[in-house]
Image (cartoon, rainbow, N blue to C red; front, side):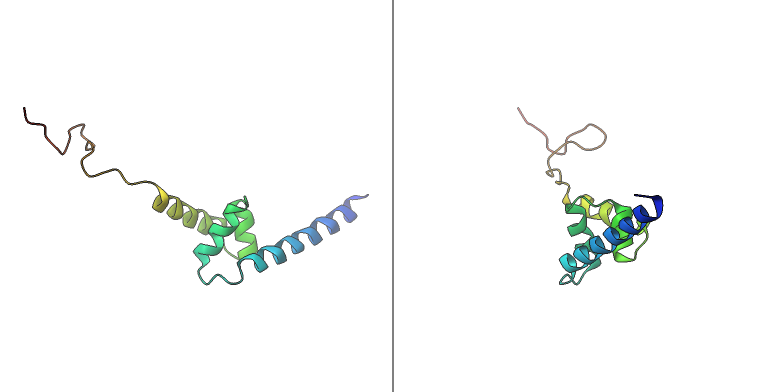
Length: 91
């Protein structure tokens, strides 16, 4: 197989991949949901951006926001940033 044939194959695979990804996310109204679904399928931000017509930077920001929201929150009685606790113990 020569370089030209290889590039034609890669182009066709890219189109098939884009069609499959579009079908997977077509019922999703929010772009964030589409990005999250494609990320869960192990697509990289650049690949997701290409499929959705976004910039890789935009996809990375959306993924960062999604991951922030999923981080567990610390309980209110945990230590503060200064190393002191918010609840006191009396003896």
